[in-house]
Structure formats: structure tokens, C-alpha cells
Length: 125
Image 1 (cartoon, rainbow, N blue to C red):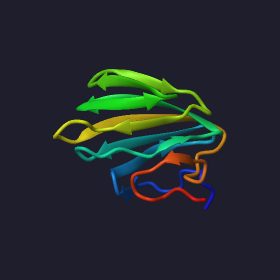
Image 2 (cartoon, rainbow, N blue to C red; image 1 turned 120 degrees about the horizontal axis):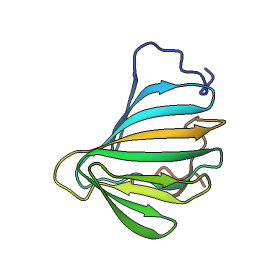
Image 3 (cartoon, rainbow, N blue to C red; image 1 turned 90 degrees about the vertical axis):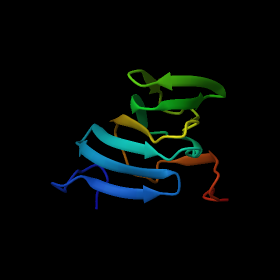
């Protein structure tokens, strides 16, 4: 399956050790996800070479690490992650963190992830 094509009519849901994501829409130059991060969990510190991301927090508070700097992003706020930037999001709260991620670029496969740090042993080496 071509990860650049959004072929399913229903949203695509995937569970992860830190929470889950649902692909809401996508096309040749974009993908939109709803991401839920469990309390106290965080995604890997990672970067992508072929896509940029825009995160808009709709529930909770996100602790974002962007190129080594920590930034708090509250409900109703957003942050931009440029292609090639090292980044991670963490849920420091006791309730679910939910944000909408809009990806733009030319490739959106989950294999465009270079993990720099990971709490779940998913770094390939």
C-alpha cells in the first residue's frame, strides 16, 4: 500500500505504547491525524526528513521538546515542527492529551522516522 494515498473511507486507527492515532484524511501533499497520548507517556524523540508537522492541542497540555528546547503547548495553542527538526511530545498531565497533527511534504510513511531516543526500545541500531 502506498502510504501517500488515503484509500480507506473509514479513519485508520493504530494503537501505540504511548497511546494511539487515527488518520482522519490525507492526499498527495498532506496527512491529518488525531493523536492521543496517555497520561505520563511520551513519543520517541525523533525527526522526519520528508515532512513537516503542525500540532494543534485540543485537550490537555503538551510538553514539546523541539531541537532540545522544552515548550509547553496548552489547549487551543499550536506549534510547528519543521522537516529535519528533532522533536517529541509528552503528556505531563493526569488526563489524556489530544492533538491534531497536520503533516505536509512528499512522503508520509511511518518509516520516515529517525528515532533518537525511545522509551519503548524501538531504536534500530
